[in-house]
Image 1 (tube, each protein chain N blue to C red):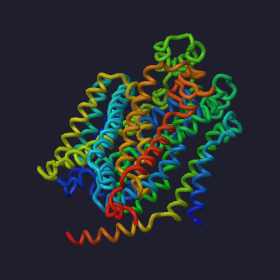
Image 2 (image 1 turned 90 degrees about the horizontal axis):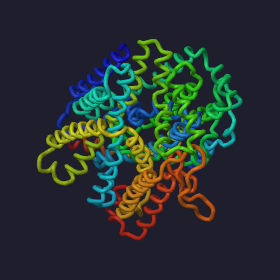
Image 3 (image 1 turned 30 degrees about the vertical axis):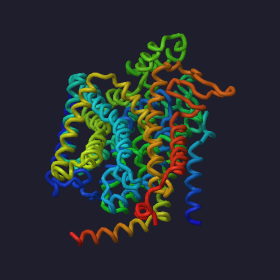
Image 4 (image 1 turned 135 degrees about the horizontal axis):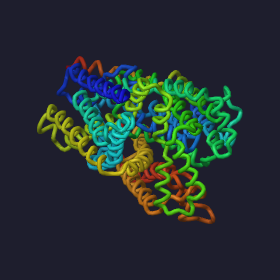
Length: 79
Length: 539
């Protein structure tokens, strides 16, 4: 279930990147000088970082990590 | 002259870092130490060097130049989409490649493909396509170095000499320091150009008397207001561009870098902070590129705006050559340098110039990757390592670095820069079209070497076809595209002012989709690798 939710979050963020709703307008200007389209995409970058944090926290390939860590000490001791 | 001196101090510093890395290396004659820093990079160096490796001159010069002519769309088009796709591919593919490299001792992607699909010469074919697509980056890096040193020194350092200095410095620290030197230099460079964005924004903002007035003035000018929106780019083109960052993980230098982490947990910070790092460098550069349109007292910027205006109003009646000439004049790749020259004090212009040089000199990883690929995928694979030993393999890698740098420098002196800029555009699409190779190798048991060959041949043919098409049909004036082929009233293939469109999409979209389909269809009808091989990859 957790993985499905994460996949949905990735697809949702990808769709949110196509923000056609701010396509032809610069207003409102955030802080008086940042066009809304640029501000939105800046916020999108922060959201992407948060999504990556969720992926790392809840979908990290721990089994691969364990597998390598188990194998490497064996190799080291063989040398 | 002061900025040039600061830049020379910077160049001496990176050279010293490379030599210091050489002295710190314990197993100098070991290929794994020289080419992969003994797979020992820590989290901080891994994050900054991997990010720095992926940021070329385009991150500072190209982004502001593109934004100068196209507006704020540049950020969503190239930066925020990369901020989602690149860390996602590092998370899904990079970590798995790292684990396989650690388990089976792979040093290049081709080694993994050969083992995974039980093939030899098909691996060589993949190597050839990867190498050909990578070479333009090295050439453009040297050209960028020559151009930037020339601009920063106010013309005192000629292009040929600037290019030679940059080539020598890069060659030296890669030659001595190998992956360790390159990673350390990249870390230093990344810190420099991340600082660059923030400092440049403040200095230029203060110089312009704040951005509020400039932004309001742009918004109220009918000719310039579209730069604050995305109306100059079609939504289909915008969507297409999200396929381009797939190229990042398929670049051999990025994938080889993924093999250098000491532990898998070192990917965590890289994956999480990658979007923020991209934003930190691209957002100020894009914003400044747009704001440069309000700078009225820099004659070079006014000349660019005039060229853009003439191209838009009279372009249709001009010859293709005259249009190309105007496009070159309107190109904004040096606007950020012009803004610094206008607003930054001399000493600061030098420091910021060093930041720009840091981004321009990103060709180090590509040179090292080509050397790693040549020595592992060709020299070692065809018996060189067995016959002459590992020390000779490392020396061969070093000789290769010298040869490739000298060849790249010689080409950089003779060929026009636009050719290689175009080649890089094709290379992005080409590497994106190669990305299904990685997905299939890592996630699909049913993939075969014949599927991999089909993807490789298709990628090579598609890149050549797009290059020939764009060379044969001149770019039209800004406005509607030249329709080459229509299907039932729909524009199937057209030449746009910026490139090619296939059903309104950039060529990268059909290239990636056809690659994936070829991998599926050809693999379905060809024999699979042995069960024992598959067992090493899938549980």
